[in-house]
Length: 86
Image (cartoon, rainbow, N blue to C red):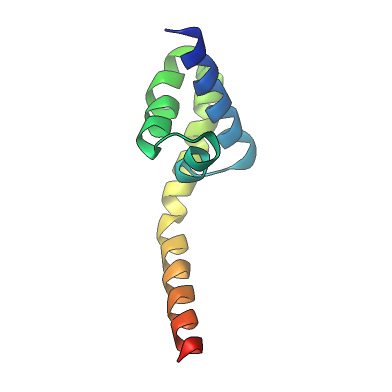
């Protein structure tokens, strides 16, 4: 694997592991697509650093489990803003 690709994967993974960020948040920070970041941390990282892979995997699982809650809160805020404008 190319050295620049390995560096990118490790930086993305460390960011997610340290901050608990979502794939979408990491993609914004590193200026890559969600698909690229997801492939980096869920497939490529496994072959580069297994310990870091396991840490990131826990964060991704937590984010997946909480996804429906964040979506509900976003919808609630959307309708509260619309109600305040009316």
